[in-house]
Structure formats: C-alpha cells, structure tokens
Image 1 (tube, rainbow, N blue to C red):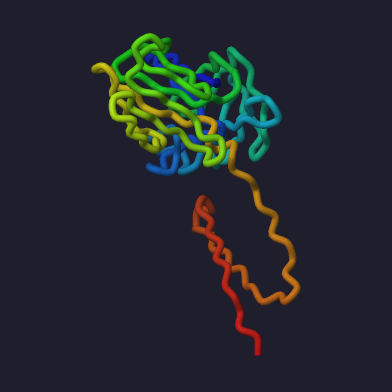
Image 2 (spheres, one colour):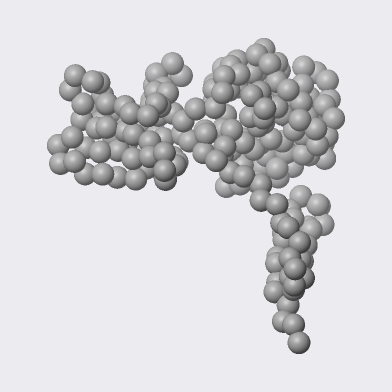
Length: 215
C-alpha cells in the first residue's frame, strides 16, 4: 500500500491504484489548491507491480529535486521526495510502496490503526463480532452484515461504518484496478462520428460519439 507523508505537517495519506493530484475539486484524489497547480496536475499509478508518477501539468513535477519528463511513467521507491510545484515548497515523501489494498480507516485515530481488508473480517473482533465485512468477488464490491438481525448492506467508497462507538470509513484503493481500457475497433458500416472537444487551456477533453443515419 503506497503511503505519502507531507514533510512539514507529518500527515500521512494512502494512495489509490490510480491516484490523481490537482486543483480540480471532486475530480482529484488529493487536492492541491495553489494557483500554479493545474486541474489534473499529476497521477501516481500502480503499473507492472510498481508505483509510477506521471507529470500531466504545464508547470512541472520534481522528484528528488529533479524535474521529471512530462507524460512519462517514472518509477517511485521508498524514500523518494516529490514536489508538485516550484513555487510552493511542500514536499511529500514516499514512505511505503506496497501494492494497493482496500482499507477501513478509523475516525480520530492514528495511521497505524487502519484495517487492511481481506476476504472476510469480523468486527470489532473474532470473539464477539457485531458486524461481518466481506468482499463479493463476482460483483466486485464490499458488504457488511450485522450479526444481530443479519441485515446485509452494500458498502460504497467513503461510506462510514460504526461499530461499538468506533467509526470506520471504507477506502477503496484497489477498485481502479478493475478498470480496463477498451479498444474501439473499426465498425464495418462506418456509421459513427467521433467529435472531440478540447478546452482552451488543453486541460479538459471531451469525446462524443454520434451515430450517422445512412441513406
């Protein structure tokens, strides 16, 4: 599970398998709200059994005080220092490069108190469980079942679960690994029109597919 630490505040946060950094609220996983940061500034991704960083910005990303090449996947290792801006000197250190895993993050607790999710979990413990949290491999989603009334509930990313007065939040780091790139093969009738729209700052792109009526 990859973990970054903000050097100045010593705060730590986990990375998703496809983790976006930038200032576009609701579209990034880590918000960097500085003028020199572009909307989708960089991505850290789990690729070929390693973590890589990719600079998608106009203003650059620095790895160990060296500006990295744009639009290239640069491997990361434990101890690397990352800066997303030359103006803002905030440094993020890579402190863990384990593969991505889904987690239960505790409310108001330390970094070490997280629960790394396996197939089944009995919470708060195996001796007197109140809730069973389990993964449905066919539907690729998490559920929890209460032991008292056997009520089954689908869990979504960011959902809170309260057990014995302790609050937990589901953090789905592996979910993006289920996504696949679909290859668009040539259609025999060739009756599709592809319309690309690009913003003036070249940061937002849109693709529309329109079916053409054949006469």
